[in-house]
Length: 184
Ligand code: HQG
Image 1 (cartoon, rainbow, N blue to C red):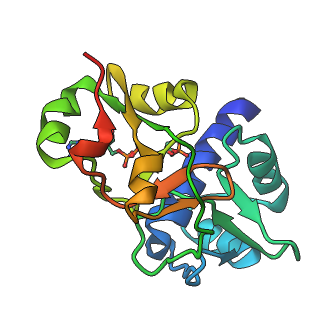
Image 2: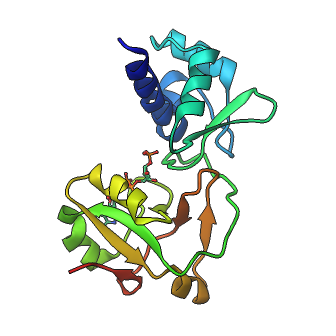
């Protein structure tokens, strides 16, 4: 396997462990989402996933989206956002959003979004992007992409709260259809 494939596979593995299912390898995250790196390496090898400090470092440094953060003492790692794991409740800074934020989704979800608005589904938050290009990439993961414009400033003025993750993803709770602009 090439090193690139390795890095991609390990990034996916880390996303799974650090966002969704740490218990699948007997690992616990603290409430801020941190895992002890040495323990994660040990538990991973006990479960058939060979990791070492160097490859973890490479995955963290080469992640375009900066998905993972290593703590300043170098001992712990966490996913910056995207969690579904219930025990994790990261204290993201609350921020005033720009006038518009964008959400990339797939056309096949539009009918349901028109009825329900945007919901977090399995994740803790609805994820929003600052630019349309990123939103397009996010939407493409699910099918034919469509970019929804979110009236973030108006929501904020009405008391809805927004958070910003370490890797600059905007997070909020469910979004009512009145704040969503769907292109024709
Ligand atoms: C859709 C990635 C039907 C929603 C990205 C999305 C992001 C509805 C899908 C992060 C709906 C959920 C999150 C409704 C929402 N009816 N469908 N009422 N409300 N949806 O993967 O936002 O690459 O949980 O539009 O960059 O796609 O993993 O969320 O299409 O930041 O690092 O339900 O994950 O980061 O899908 O992606 P997801 P997402 P990574």
